[in-house]
Every structure is written in C-alpha cells, then in structure tokens.
Length: 484
Ligand code: BG6
Image 1 (cartoon, rainbow, N blue to C red):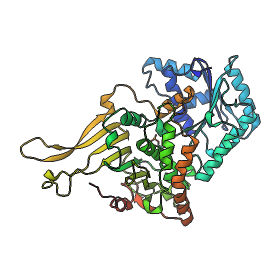
Image 2 (tube, helix red, strand yellow; image 1 turned 60 degrees about the vertical axis):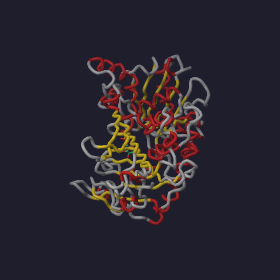
Image 3 (tube, protein in one colour; image 1 turned 45 degrees about the horizontal axis):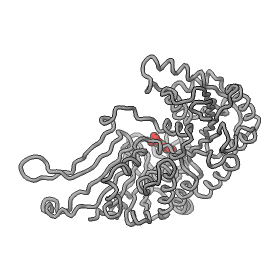
Image 4 (cartoon, rainbow, N blue to C red; image 1 turned 180 degrees about the vertical axis):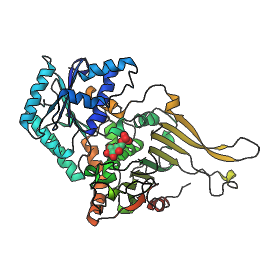
C-alpha cells in the first residue's frame, strides 16, 4: 500500500517539545494545505506532559501558518487538520504506555491498516528506551512489510564516533536500516537541493570544478543569536558537534562529490566516498571561540545553566583537506558561529587568480579572484563575482556580481526544509537522509580533535557578542593567500 492513497498515522514522540511544535507539525499542516497527505491520516502526539486533545490542538495552532492557503480558506483548513490531531501522555520507557498508544492508534486508524511514521522529536539519550518500548508493544512491523513502518530521528547522533556507533546499534535492534530516516534538515533547504542542478545540469562548471581552477572553498554559517536558554543541550556539545559535523559537512560533501550514477539511488554513495577522503581535522587547523558579553548581551559563561569555566566553543573555523584527484591541495574552510554580527549561510567557491598581466599596472597586488557564491539563507541566491570595466572614459575595473536572487527570479513559495523532508519520508525516498556510512565517515573527520580538545581542556578564544568572531580567524586565513 502506498501512503499517498492510503491511511497514514504520523506519531510524534516528544510532541510537547519545541521541535514538534515549531517545525514538524507545521510542516505536516503545510503538506496538508497542498493536498500532499493521504486522504486518511492522523497525527498522534505522545510525550510525558499530561494534556487533553483540545489543549494539544491549542498548543500547536500557534505555529501553523497560512502560507499556502491565504485568506479565509486557511481557517477551514486548520479546523480540518486539527480535527485529525490527537495526544496521549505516557512514559518513554514503559511498554504499557506504548501498548495504550497502540490501542489509541487502532481506534483512530479504523478498519484499514495504516502505514506508520514514528518521529523521534526527543533527546537521543532516550532513543533506545523508546525504540524498545515500541518494539515490545508490537508497534513496529518488519522492514519490507505492508503497510510499512518508518522511523525518523534527529541529530545529534551521538557525540563522537563510538557513541554514534552505539546509538546505531541500539536502534537497529528494533528498526532495520531501510526503515530509518536520519534527518539533517539542511539537506531539505532549497538552495542546498539546488547544488545538484547547479553542478550536474550545467556544462560550464564541471571543467573548472577542481584543484586546477579552485583556490579554496568557504562554507560559512553564522547566527546572531546566542544559545537562547539551550545550555542543557549545548554546553559540552559545542558548535562543531551542533552544526559543523553535520550541516556544514553535508554541504561540503555535495560540493565536492562526484556525479552520482543516478539521483534517485546513488547520491549517498558518492557523499560517503568524499567524506571518507577527508583527512581528520587537526588542532593546528582549527580556531575555537566562545562569545563574551557585548552589545548589552550576556556572554556564554553568564548564560543560565552554563558553568563559569565552560570551555564549550560557540565558534569554530576548521580547515578540511580532501584527498582526491579533484581536490588535493584545495582547503575547504568551514566556519560556524553563534552570537555573530550576521545571520548567514553560504558556500563560496573562490577561484584562482587570473594572470591578468595587462591590468597589473592598475592592480599591482593582483586582480581579485572570481567567486561563485551560493547563498543558502537568508535571501537565497547564486552570485558570480567577475571583474568588469566601470563604464566611462578611461579604463577602470571593478569587482561586480551577477546575481540570481530567488526572490526576484522565481514566483513560487520556497518550501520549509521540513516539508520537503517529511514528504520524502512519506514517499519512502531516503536520498536526502543520512545513511549509516555517512554518519561514521563524518564522525571520523572530527572525533580525534574533539577528544583532544576535551582531554587537554583547550580554551576557546573569547569574542564579543555581535562581533565578527575571534581574532584567530585572521591568523588562520593568512595561511591561505590567494594563489595564481
Ligand atoms: C540546528 C542547531 O540543527 O540548526 C541549532 O541545533 C541551529 O543550533 C539550527 O540554530 C539552525 O537551523 P536553521 O534552519 O535556522 O538555519
């Protein structure tokens, strides 16, 4: 049976939490508004907090948006959608709680057996308990059976290679790899999905997409906010585990991988290959920072729940090296930071300098390099930096940009990452999800240095809240002057 024309139960574990309220359930509503959910579906929330169905509906309403059905129709759509949302409370480690959940599901599903998606919007520490309780209560059907059962899990998948392997083993005692959808929500972002089209649907990039033409690649991620009360999750974890080992490394993989045999099946194989070719990061290739007070905002160590001597990094710059014929010698400079001066995620492919001898009298230090800038957010765009003559008498050159701004080039709404990914789970398309091999290879890049930082208690450099980051950035960048 295909969920699209069948019966689907979407069970959100951790339904009273932030992720469920802000991302998962609004994405389901958005799919509903676009008629992308099956005719019969039910959303069943489960968490420890006691709540009635009505209270649950009230709680989730606040985050449902009318993007796809503006105007009066929206109210109607919301009422219909909410009428299919239910809630049960219980303990995550209790088979009885899940047996009760099973009873509710059977009632809601009616006589036609439903496909089931279990969405784990809970901390990974309890993944194992839940998986076991689900298995014990008979809620999980074996892989390959119809109607199917799938499980969606969210990072962090462990804190290093060993703990990630352990988590994988635990989950695999109940679910088969074919049933597991590991979300990295950056893979659902529109511009990141476009990397495939940009690279493999255009002729002009391929001949220059290599060490002969590319000088360096920057993958940068910046947020203006601090940890916003998430000390319980963030402290001891830090920005490398939070976003670099997953979101940024996935972007790198899509930029650096070879063309897959087909888009439907083999993208992950190519990503695994390139991830395995990355040398483990060393401490010499790393800048670590931690935000201090600035602009009237608290420093990280003053945040509630953060120890006064915490060495958790809120900023990191790492230089990664890919050992391959295509990329040998090209540094991939990844940076990620909270409490910085801007909100921005982008990939910047910087090409080598042109010899440009005829212009050297005007630009004795050399012409600025061409750059392809893929802006993931905000203001999604693809820009290409070129040298151009400034119109007018005389010969003056300027570095200018060809700019494809999504907002002006395309009419349609840009879907939220979660909409796209949840739809793929329903359709059974695992292409944009992280497979076990990718996870292992990603941890191998960072695990040795993460251990070294923890063991030697390496202090991050302070930087002011709202600044451009720690001073060490400039020193690191000066090691990579532009090449010809
Ligand atoms: C999450 C991180 O994975 O991504 C957060 O845990 C971060 O720390 C968030 O703020 C950013 O996501 P987005 O989609 O807002 O860029």
